[in-house]
Image (cartoon, rainbow, N blue to C red; front, side):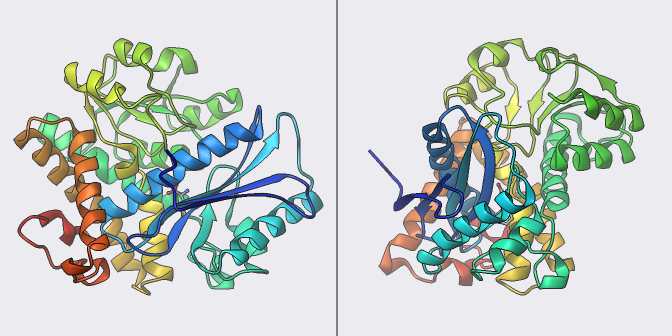
Length: 368
Ligand code: PHE
């Protein structure tokens, strides 16, 4: 059964490439979610990605307590296709056409393969776009904020496991040194964490060297003898097999789609490995963008909202422990509860009014 409100698949007029926009839910507000411009063996694989990622955006906003819905856009590039500047603009304008045709139901932002400059190109056609460069009125790159949000989640877990939110001296394995992963690795190194890193691109070893990190190959790193594994690469790092090999006490990171299948969360729980759901730990970027561009809060207030991921994770782990659940179950119950509350017309006030007003059954709402 399709549990998305709508999915548009459109052959771009200029690029002839498949443009996919999945709107999972607008129950909490108009949908937002990044544009992934990436290579797929077949465009249907891009569709699968868009369906999963847009559902994760719904959960991301619900847990963050923000009045936005979940969506995602994917342009599925055939393997090996490189876009020159002209073709790239064509693709972005094709995406902008689809977004414009949705009339505000979905707004896009950067994601894997896209940048604030790409958002500027989309913004030439439609206003429904986040993270344009600051001189064009946007909130700019979301990656540093996603990294800071993941750091906040790591602090909460570190405190629970080791009694301190400081990551100084903690052994962490960062899997993936893309924009977010590299930012996060820098923050962790600055705090004095002992880093092991990897990336599928061997050139990224330079970043590891700068940070004094140990380099491991992508297939070795999950079994590294570290305290916490930090997924920051393209999805589905955790399979039943890799989860069985982990030697860490927690897995917390900014990557989307970390689990190959949902049952891996149970396996991690059985092994007493704390897993913070990806849609909780990766919310910093959207929290910052939506807070500044939709709610017009100051940069300082937006940062505070990102930092509040620490309390959100704290509450989630508490709730999970109280109910004998794993964190993934506790998080999805919270998502269901928040979606149910707003889709039930008798249960006003709407989400936007409840941002800081916690009800007895929903104490986590206050976190932004
Ligand atoms: N890449 C972001 C995410 O997965 C998407 C995004 C960022 C959307 C900023 C809007 C604004 O959360």
